Image (cartoon, rainbow, N blue to C red):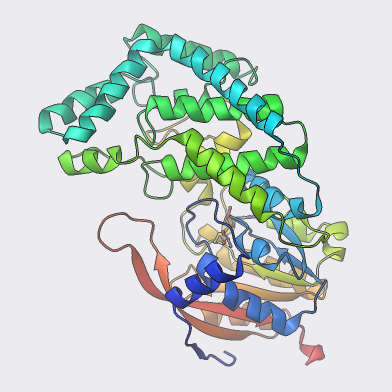
Length: 446
Ligand SMILES: C[S@@+](CC[C@H](N)C(=O)[O-])C[C@H]1O[C@@H](n2cnc3c(N)ncnc32)[C@H](O)[C@@H]1O
């Protein structure tokens, strides 16, 4: 392995750096987000690149790296998940556009939001009323009796677990209306989240608000960039009003009074307020940087590496693939559905999408081949690569080095101490693991 050196920067120092330079804006809680390593990543990219060159963030996730580089480089962001495309459009590609969110437009959005919200409140009055009473209960603190009552209420919602059967007339209607929208997703009122996630990650009323903002966005925003910005603000509200632990792999089991107390801490968060706050922040954030030629795409990384037109724009590939066997499509299926909004019938207890992407980087039998593909394409296209990886990941650094050198590339790993978020709320929130930034260039250039 090449020069491995200890980096003295610690997470807290990195956070201060990020706050000061206004180069970053946060959209969602995300497993493996590189927000706290941004200065380190930029430093490595700066070492091998010049201003105005093209940097491909090939596994962009929340787009954090591209956002942090967008003032200096032409950024091409890519990820297989649609929500990532929306965030990257909103934060990176949009900085070379005139953004128009005037007062009239904002009041039109609010009016449409209210229209959808009223329609849903009228369709499910008893259910919403019951749910609201549980939110009020939370203020007095939960008891075991209250917990059992709530579980009964929760179980009355149609779901894959009860084969979508329910005794409630209102909830039967919710299911029927959902099925109608499988072929006609833009039918009024919007109700996808209300069906999928009421009383799981959100209360039914929070779901109604999410659906109503989603409706208002489709109704009022035709301009691509404004629409993507509003959707990114909604992704933020969705992430921060959720009672999950930062992902949507499984909603929390209400196994005791403590867990139900914890879940209900999130139930009176106002989705609309979170949405508007982030919308204003993004609009403000877009004023900072000069025009550049950014692009955001949604492709499997192999397809992208074969796209000659896109690869022409690329000088450096920054690769931050998944580190573990956990598929992002399972952890963020709810975010994906919020963007796709296609009323797919969910499966399993977790109410997953049935079209979830399976990444080769998360499969022990395929991970080596996945890296071979990446390094092979980089070598053939004469592109430099900077890879983020960890010592606990799916394949060892020694194996990676072998793959890269076989493809005629150098392999220079820099070690960084980093508290890695495990996305849990209780007990250990983070693990001290070794993160690496590995730079590879073609050998004959040395
Ligand atoms: C570690 S995360 C990236 C985090 C990102 N750097 C950030 O700061 O938010 C890995 C990303 O790889 C994406 N991904 C996994 N397999 C992929 C594939 N085959 N093609 C494209 N993207 C993929 C996932 O959707 C996920 O967003």
